[in-house]
Image (cartoon, rainbow over all chains, first blue to last red; front, side, top):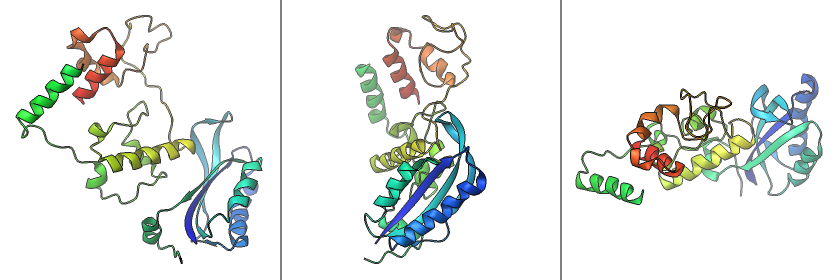
Length: 108
Length: 138
């Protein structure tokens, strides 16, 4: 199991409830592959971009900390890449020291 | 320009007490993990044109600088930080063909570095040397 941090940007033109539905989708996807969310999915709400993406000035951000088996989220990343609502996403493996500091259990 | 650099180095070696090594704000603020989401922290390692500050100016170690740079690049990808920012310039009536549409001819660093370049009359010809001089000043 490894500690990850996932950030997703959802299209700013999508309605708020529809965008927030992605928090559940992320949670479900993590649970489906045998992973575990650390705390809740952090919903940042609508945030102004530092530069326009696809000619849009803002988007919804969400951040999730999670523990999952290596490679288990490849499929979900693919669906995110194909989803029209998702502008960008980033899945980062947290260094072990940082995962420990955040209190994320990482069983070998 | 190489000779200028050597001169600076020589002065520093001759009188080491005059030059204090700069400590990074990562050290003074005890940052353990450089998070790409921490925009306020990362912004302090960027110039007002949103360029990444060099190691000498920021006072980072090699490793710190790499971590800062990577974090800034991640933040840029996620549109948390800009790749480039236009700065309102105080300089009017540029040299060369600049000033036609109200912006400086090229990116030459912050406008408050103007006096740093003016005393280097020898180094007028190329932009690289001017930028070098600005960096030496900082």
